[in-house]
Image (cartoon, rainbow over all chains, first blue to last red; front, top):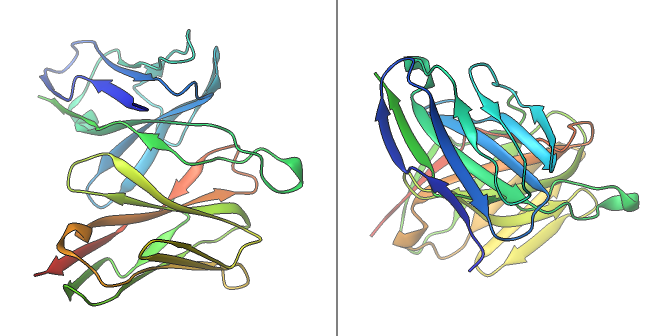
Length: 120
Length: 112
């Protein structure tokens, strides 16, 4: 079954304690991305990756790190979590379907079920 | 950065009625996508419409795109209780470097 798997689904931690949220997809997608979702703010992109060893900042990268050593995995690392990182986190992946005039466009995103993180 | 804006923010209708949600955006796009999110769950892709398309259907869903007005609408016909969810539009802007830009969503409640 095609899926994006995130772990853990729920986590309560304390300020400053390093944590990693894992993300794995089994669809051989080049594109992977991390979002956070907060009430009233919608989805905000943290980091994205267009392929192995290629990562780039999204809109809210401060306080986060990522790596893409393998195509299927894209972990999100919080080196020193703070209470303002309390949020619902989503990992997503996609192919790059060809768009108009042979360009590559962002295609359908497949989302994980989310990881609810609370930092005390 | 938020490009898409959904309208209305919330919508409550009776089961069986049609639901219409709108999305406006600011810059030229390659495509526009609609997603559904059940409470606290992951988003699920509904429809992708390219900039050279005007209308697309998928089951009870109909999406229109008006690039001259920079707007899109999602119509759900014959709504069911299971359609209760939040609906988001996301735009793949021409100069976005493969980043989808999301609206804040429309919360749809279907009353039985």
